[in-house]
Length: 267
Image (cartoon, rainbow, N blue to C red; front, side, top):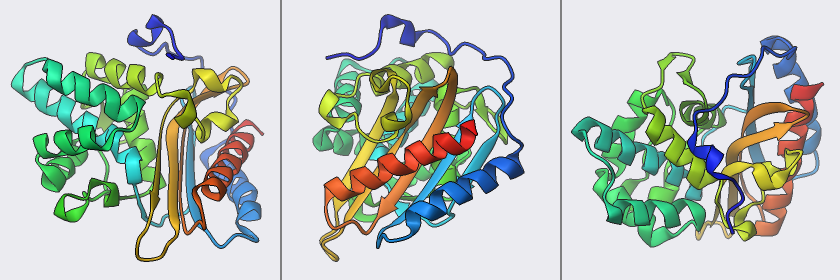
């Protein structure tokens, strides 16, 4: 079931400047909101939020985390950069893989496209162009063990949903960006948890989630990134976490963190 209309293929509309707090105030509010959540949990987490109207952003936590399946957005961005460089459209096969990779989180499709972009080396090269500075592709073909930070995920989202990042213009062309946005708006309902919990209308959120049980520890990585609308404003949100005893507790913490992050941004 698609959760968005064909309008999502159009460029993002510019928003009027908001009355968002200063960067310092937003960082302080985010730290207050999320520090309270950290009490009593054995899991680690980090979060980042950006008001697309004012470009005010805040980050809580600088540690790196496994991406799990949120890296699939990054893989698709790298694929689209390669296609742009070659002056071509994605092939039917690439589009088929991209659709199920984002909408259904299909791992076989992700593996096929990971190989096509050149694996970790290709991802790292693309991320240098996208402005990500602390994200490194997973070794030995294990794309889910790519390491990233919440701040870097915010940069990636900004490349997809706005016109670049703090360091420069968007590397992705508008058609490429619109394509990623459309697929992120068509994630199957059973995978639509996460940052959508902070939205006025969760069904209109565009997102990608990731979840991974770690064999070495028996604990879970649970992540969520995307664009949400709350009180008429549009925000980019990333929540990364690990150390959960099960997926369900991870999802619950990620959703609490997303709601707290939006609450801080709206305060």
